[in-house]
Image 1 (cartoon, one colour):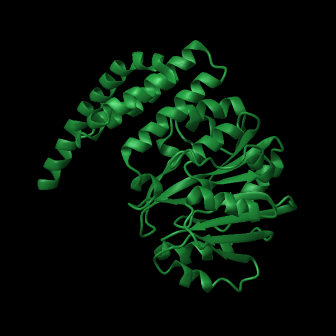
Image 2 (tube, helix red, strand yellow; image 1 turned 120 degrees about the vertical axis):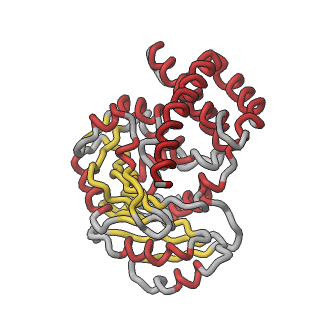
Length: 331
């Protein structure tokens, strides 16, 4: 790994794979950043589309360094390779299908300087569709405790952040987060043990030792489409990773009995979402996930019946609203 860390320099790592339709917009958004001290490390992971053709147009830009892999390594491997090639004090993973405002990196660096105890700084995110149209605001779907705490720029202590992350991955994607490189490397980077939750796993590792800075202005644009890692990974794997990651953390950290109950209930509720899907995928995967819960934290199974009831109540409450909307649409 590159041991050099140039003070103030931000290394932007772009792991490129098969997203040619978004790539030009992504590269332009990074080059347009108002923060001047950046290097853009782009690694193409054997994209089968015309991604490389697009990236070649940026190869001569003084801030862009293009690397082409001869063998597909996957997102985690390529992202860690980018860190090994980087020279910055800070690093950010700019997913090749996302977008951002010109001030994004500048504001994140300012936040890092304002809060020296922070190992991560992240910004509020807007959700956009494949065409770039606004479809949501990540902040608005978070639990009420997070929304109350994060109405403005602030520093979240590691203990606060632990509890927010055990409830949900409040850092919606890596494109929203700036890391101090020393924090990233201290925990050996992104883990290949996860296909979907490697970022969530890394956040939890870092906040065991560092605080987190929050920028309340929505400067990151998180694109939602049917070829993202989460959408292309089967539910069997996704929920196994949720179970393994979260139940493992609940046992590892110093939590009160009430907190352990609360978060175990939360994991079981997440599982109940899968169990009660109309496709019956959750039912087909029941034995597999049951055995995983039993292995990681058997006590959590006590909360499954209550979680299923809560999920059913939620589905029943939504049903009349959906029916009313359908009737209105026919008028």
